[in-house]
Length: 145
Image (cartoon, rainbow, N blue to C red; front, top):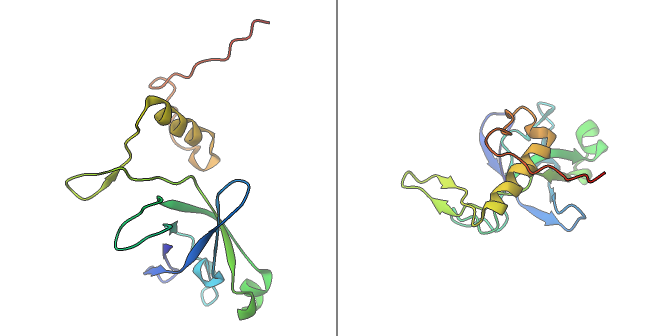
């Protein structure tokens, strides 16, 4: 996992996915999400990239959403409690690299594209994105009622 620390410099830590109902949980060290010196969270620009090796992202990129540390770690700086759990947003698996070296998401079907758009619409973290109803009208449920 990679992040920008409270010192505004890039950092990295080891992390692992945790088998959970929502498939969105990552375990890492507490100091990877909370800086005890500045008493600030370091979740700014935090990403988990499982299987990362030499720039490759075989299982996608997952943005950190919310972090949880042990109370004794962030209050008392207890190193025995230096662990954290982070919920992550749905991952993006880059499927195309442009000439400029940037990734693009390419959907195989229009159903995949609609599913991603719907997931963003339903996520409160993306509530400030303008409504795209005029670009992608959703089918309305039929009520014979």
